[in-house]
Length: 150
Image 1 (cartoon, rainbow, N blue to C red):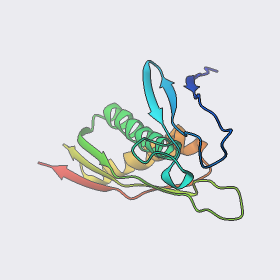
Image 2 (image 1 turned 120 degrees about the vertical axis):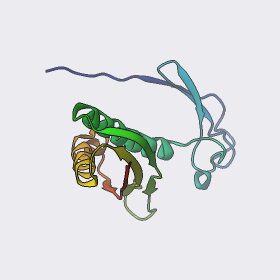
Image 3 (image 1 turned 120 degrees about the horizontal axis):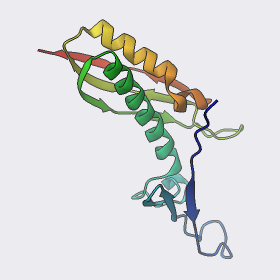
Image 4 (image 1 turned 180 degrees about the vertical axis):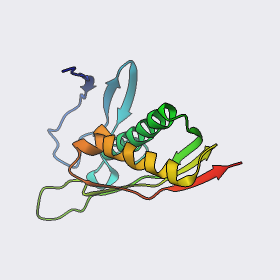
């Protein structure tokens, strides 16, 4: 069986000596050859102008759904000409472990040369095959809009 391995690198420097409210949450993450500066989410004293891990998790789910759908569409010779997603994640804060519990992907897809039912069936198959959604314990839902172009 084939195995796919993934690596990133992360670096933070600073000091936590002054306590929880004082240390800088910004840190450098390198994915492949692409360096990014991330921070904590603003409610956790992070820099709201920088991406945070929660957003990256949501982006990974959205991107995986897109790539899974495009692969299936291409294999079935369905012409996808546009795909946009406005994804949303929910992370309630309570007594239990804090985690993202819900993800809603809202793709707006334009296809050509097929019908909406075929495109929707491919989208559902892609959702079942998306390895990020299959990895998460959060409930990942699809709320798609499909348009057939002339």
